[in-house]
Amino acid sequence: MKLRADKPSDILSRHNIKPSYQRIKIYEYLSSHFIHPTVDCIFEDLKDEIPTLSKSTVYNTLKTFVKANLIREINIENLEIRYEFNTKDHGHFKCNNCGNIYDFNIDTEVFLTKELEEFQIDDKNVYFKGLCKNCTNKI
Image (cartoon, rainbow, N blue to C red):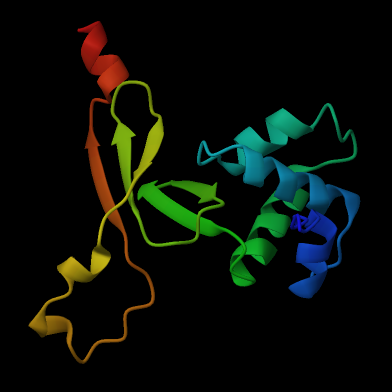
C-alpha cells in the first residue's frame, strides 16, 4: 500500500490555520527551499506568482507557522531572522563569504551541563561561522 503525503492545506487545517492561497504557497515554498530564507527572500521569490502578496502577509504567515511549530525561526546575525522547515534540533554553519547557511546534525544533549539541571530549556541552537567548502576551494 502506498502512503499519500498530506497536502499543505490539510496540514495547515490540522494546526488550526486557515489554508488561504497565500499561506499554502508560503508553506510550499518553505517545504521545498531549504535555504533558510528571510521575509524579503520569500516575498521576492513569490511576488510574481502572487501579485497580491505583501511583506506584511509573509511576515504574519511566518509568525503563525512558528507559533504552530510548523517552522522554526533562526537568528544567527543580530538583525537577520531566517526561517526553516526543519524543526528538529540541529546545528547551523553560516559562511562569512557567500552568506549561505548549512544544516548539520549534532547531538544537542551533549551540551547540557550540570549547571543547567534546574533550568527550563525552550530552544537549543548551535551556530558556527567561517568559510564553507565552496568558498574555501576558491581561495
